[in-house]
Length: 307
Image (spheres, one colour):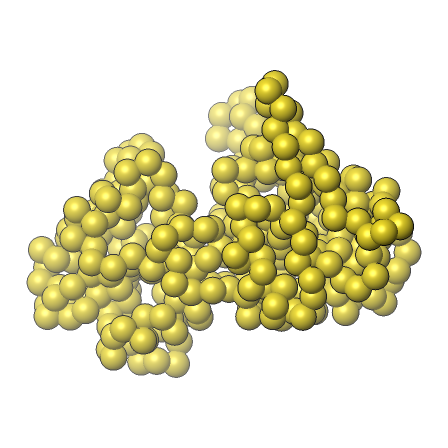
């Protein structure tokens, strides 16, 4: 049985794009919710009731709580049905922000969820994980093969298709790595803001010392959740004379009124990768994800012993 890519109905689009890039079959995991909230899953086995040795699972972990249970059920049963090597493609990786306990008794979710995924999968591939105090993905997810890709090059191509010479601005110091990557080799002026956060929706922004008068500015970040940081940056940029402000993000979480709030602040276009399904998706990640999957699959094939 050839390699198979499993996905759920709500992510059929990006999963099929990845399967097409890889030249493998994509199959949907059947899912039924009982009245008490529990899931019944059914995996797409062959006529003999088995799965291939090498199995790819596509599940982006926005709205993660139920999805983590899905992965637990799926991965454990898949190994019972013949899967030896399980690769998780999770373009968005949840619970990565809390990497230390800020107060006694706080749960360090990064370590726990990372270990949870490492116990289920042989490889984890993600995009722009929100890591603060760890240098590499395998510190957060101690799995045999952990690959972290960046959405910045795809966003840069998208920006280049709309603007000949934009100014790139990151909303805070953490965005510097994505700004530098997106601007690399293009000669675009760029800088990052200074941000002070007073709450989930209360932020204060200071613009970099960069003249934006009459310029097309694009805000670039890894994730947009409440949208407040990007909105505040846009207001300041427009007040400083920017001709236009657009936003390009890897992960379009956009909780509640985030998108409309950003638009009301004067952000003209909002673009995102398809790491999280959203109407703003404009940059498919399948080509980069496929390269990573091939790299992992080649490594796994050198060791076919079950875990």
